[in-house]
Image (cartoon, rainbow, N blue to C red; front, side):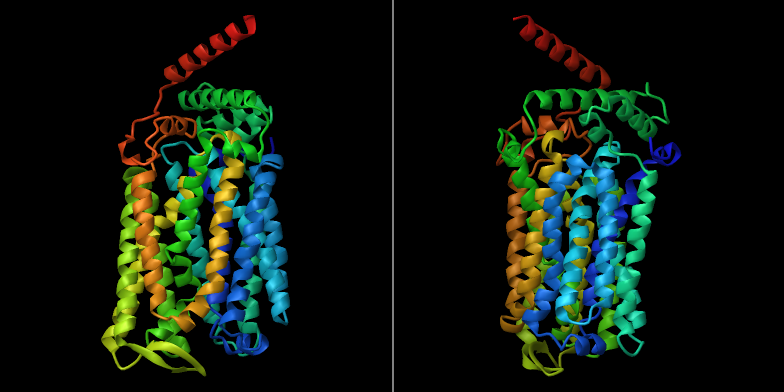
Length: 513
């Protein structure tokens, strides 16, 4: 069937390998943040100002927006597996263009192409992971997507740091060229992994879907209890959805769907409006404004932040299926808003307009304690995101939807992420150059607004199969989500088979009538 049953039998291997696609996003983030103060980069690209630099950075998320929207068709037509392979191939093309770029236009084109790849992988990988992993570890596996992003950021940043000692254009071309290696590994390696059983069943390949489920969750035994449970649930869900008509974008507007579509899209929106990617893309600007001058010193301080980002994602991976989605999101947004208020307050109290490297910026000088406090608060902000919003923002949207709309709805949620990512990449450099410390209070306000929204409207989904999530939203409680308990929707094999029997009898009665 075009995959290794031995590999498929290990849920952690089969669920985590596709995360290399998330790592591509991380590679791209630090591929730009690490060169913003590189003399060779500034010389080749004519020292871009805030607007031009924002446009060059935003080219990637703009391409990702396109890629995420393409998933709405590709995931349902090519399949989840082939879409991941295609994303890796496109990334290689984008990396070649970036590595060879000799002007801003060529770099922008290369970043748009790479962005399409990131958009495809960031939308389809969580779908693929959520559909091949058992519910007991699904949150842990999907959250590996965020961890792979942090590793991509860290690895690329240290490559950038090492290459910063090279004189000339090789200091940024080598890192941009090396980033194609993970994509090659991803595309070749995915040929050994199975296709999503839910996709196979939806395509009428039911025996193949059963065997994949058996290899994934039953050691090849098609009579395993978990395999039977998932197979029966998928069968019921697919048969029910086929009676509802053909898949289309209009399905997103059918009763019960708009609420879930909005939850997925708004969570991805909030994940950007927390300000985390701003701290990743433009951390050099943030620390320079805090009074940390010197290229080497700034790069080292940045590296500490990226290490913390990787380290604090680990507890979330292990405990996301124990803590639950809601508590992590509520606590995380509160903490992030608090740290940003401190950063903005310290900047406002001790900062002033002054020249740095020929630019006039808002900076803190002569106050070592304030500089250190701003840097530490920035670190705490990153840690708060890494252990809460980061992993959940990928896990939650991937488990909200029915099979009928999953591909389109997840890609729409991911497209929302990239739309706001693009807007912020454009807006933040001019924002820091004009309103300075007030920028941090804007993002703090977004975090507090997200906390209120999540508390009232986001139900808990931890521990359910993707089919059991359906019953969560049948409970109602649109504005009182905390009233939906953790046990809602959970079933045994006997429950599923009994429901299937009732459904078949109902269909037989309708046919007889």
